[in-house]
Image 1 (cartoon, rainbow, N blue to C red):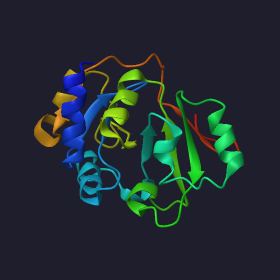
Image 2 (cartoon, one colour; image 1 turned 60 degrees about the horizontal axis):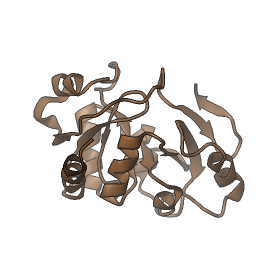
Image 3 (tube, rainbow, N blue to C red; image 1 turned 120 degrees about the vertical axis):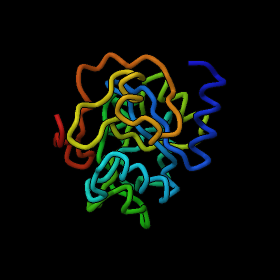
Length: 184
C-alpha cells in the first residue's frame, strides 16, 4: 500500500466516508466510529441490523481506550497475550459508548490487528475503525478489490487496494471476561 493511498483513505474516513480495505481474511468496510451518520450509512449499505453490533480494529490498544472499560484488567490481559493478531474480543464497554457500535450488547467487539495494511490505515486515520466484512448481509465476504467494486459499486467512497492476510476464515471472537468462544 502506498502512503498516498493510506492518506487518501484516512481523509475519506475523517470526512464521514466509507472505506473498503484488506484485513486478515477478507476486505472490510469501515468508517469513523465517532460519526453516527457514517455508521448508519454503513449499516444501510450492508443491509445489517444495528442490534448485532460492530467490530472495531486498531493499530494499538491505546486507540481503543475510548470504547473499552480499561478497569477490567483480566480482560485486557487476556487480549494482550495474543494482540496484535487475528483475535477479536468482546470487552466490557465504557459508559456512553454508542449502541450503534455495541448493538443490544453490553460489550464491544475489538481487535488490535496485525494485518499491516489495516493497522497502517488505523495509524494514518489516528482512529480505531469499524471493521465489518465487505458484503451485503448474508452474502460471502469480498476477497478482492474487484469483488468489492462488484458488490458495492458507488455505494462506498474509497477502496484501499492491498493484500489480504493469510487467515483461512474470519477472526475468532471470544468473550474476554469468560474466555468463551462466541464465533469460531
